[in-house]
Length: 148
Image 1 (cartoon, one colour):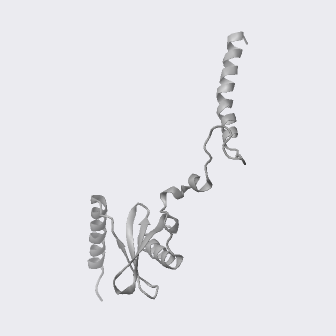
Image 2 (cartoon, helix red, strand yellow):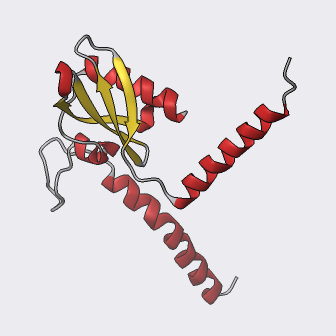
Image 3 (cartoon, rainbow, N blue to C red):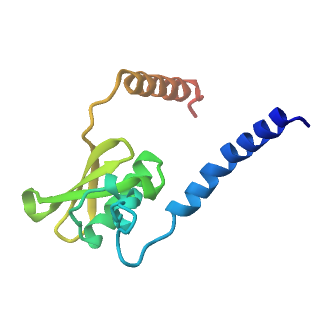
């Protein structure tokens, strides 16, 4: 190998190794705060909770609403979050929820039972067309069944 080839190999080796070494250097935690000029980052700011609201909703209200919304929208519970609560008519409570990319309101009675989950996000044209096609298909399936 000539001198030029050896230098190229060394540069390539350093180019591959440098990001790995830099990652090892920056992932360590400092017990005394920021020594290297970097801002300390708390655990809560590094997690995905920055998308979730700060206000806490009581679990006895949030949990039944999340389960009801998961059943209605056929989604896993980890993509549904209770955002806020407000009193509703009749002594119940409305729980405002973020359901994946949509918004919904869960109506909870004064006894703690879920009355309904109402979608509050306007429907897109694609969603309206899909629902219309599903209704049409269901109507065709009903009319195709022989009556006894």
